[in-house]
Image 1 (cartoon, rainbow, N blue to C red):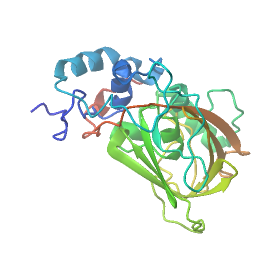
Image 2 (cartoon, rainbow, N blue to C red):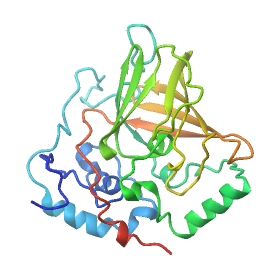
Image 3 (tube, rainbow, N blue to C red):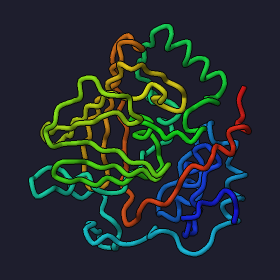
Length: 296
């Protein structure tokens, strides 16, 4: 068995990682297989592309995990394609239904959550740490060591994520790292002094057709993005999810961390629906490539 392959891999895309965000590159190689658009990779991953492309093409076998399977609940145009501008679906209770496979529309936000030019006023210690991470090309980012992304960088990550909405909970299943996140919408209060957790503790409430999610208790070992924006134990993240139509969602993220930033700042990420597909089996394996990361 190839040592980089997960034993659970049964599809034509392997469930592998060399210790960094291999899934990002792999997903771009086979974007055509999903029927998705090709995105330009950020500088963090460009040096890997020739190696990953050759390796992935060499090990492809069999069929993938229902990459192209028509969903009977998807509205269609006359030619049978998914109608991504149709009205957003709603639950039995009348709220927008966020269920589906979603992908961040651009990879730039993973490299820099503030890529659209928002003012980010870091306090001196945070600015110094961010400069150090930028100088070494984020060589010590958590994902390089098989530590999953957290709230904001998973929002920015352009590998697909599956949302499952129930009356009291919104569940996110991430293709990358076989990870999941729970957002409780059953009316429970925020925890006042939570133990640190990789995804913190999230509760949501409806503001019209927008789901407003508050998260605290996020482990300080996580980064806000792969570029290295830091945070403290005082971080509180507010997300506002709004499904504009069947195929498009906006996610507004507010960073409020008085120990790291002079004032709160907000970014808005576009998400696109990936119709008639599913997430793949992908895990991170033993940091195998961490020692070979290119840095300054």
